[in-house]
Amino acid sequence: MSTHIGAKKGEIAETVLMPGDPLRAKFIADNFLEDVVQYSSVRNMFGFTGTYQGKRISVQGSGMGIPSLAIYTTELIKEYGVKTIYRVGSCGGMSPDVHMRDIILGQAGTTDSSIIENTFGPNMYYSPIADFELLDSAYHVAEEMGIKTKVGNIFAADRFYNDEIDTQKLIDYGVLATEMETSGLYLLAAKYHVRALTILTVSDHLLTGEAMSAKDRETSFDEMMRLALNTAVK
Ligand code: ADE
Image 1: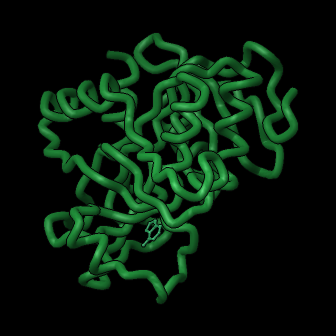
Image 2 (image 1 turned 180 degrees about the vertical axis):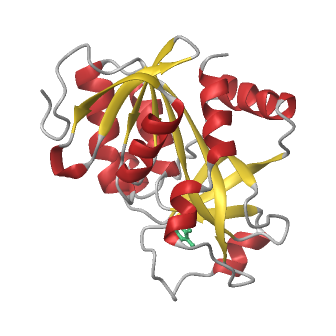
C-alpha cells in the first residue's frame, strides 16, 4: 500500500479518471461503472475500480490544488503502474468565448504555482501539455456524441481566492478557464512518461459572476463523465 492510497498492488486499473472531489469519484463509480470495488478511503479520498463497457477503469479523488493532486498522481503512477489519467473536473470560465456548462479539453496548462520553477529552476518556463492522442481522441469522441468542446489553455491557479492576479491579461492571451490542477498533472505525466488529459465543465464564470451550486456540480457533469469514459474505452 502506498502512503496515501490504501490499495494493494493490482487493485487499480491502468486507466484512471481523477475528479478533484472524492464524492464525485463515488458518484462516477455508483452511476457509470459496473462490478465496483472500493480500494481506498484513506482521508476520505475515495478510490474505486470497476468496468465500463467491459474495460477496467479506476476512479480516484485528487483533492484540490496541485500539491494534493501531485500526491495521488505520483502514487498512482509509481506505486500502482497507472498509465493514463483523465482529470475530470469543474472550472471557472475566463474567456468570453466559454459559457456555463461548456466542456473544455485542456490542451496546455498555465500556472502561477511554483512547481515549474521547483522542477526546472528560475529561468526555464516549461509548458505542460496534454497527451496529443488523448486530446485528439476526446475531441473526436465528443463530436461523435454531439458535444461541441472548446480546446485550449487552462490556468491552474495556486490560490482559489486571489485578487492580485491579472485575470484580464490571461484572457487576452487566450486562456479559456481556471481550475487548480492541470499544469501539475501534465508536468507529472511528462516526468513519468504517462498520458494525461484534463476534461472540464464550466461551473462558474469569472466575467459574468454566474455559479452552479455545490449539489449541482456534484451531479450535473454526466456529459463530461461519459465523454471521458467513452474516450477511455476507444
Ligand atoms: N474550479 C471551479 N471554478 C473555479 C474557479 N473559479 N477558480 C479555481 N478553480 C475553480
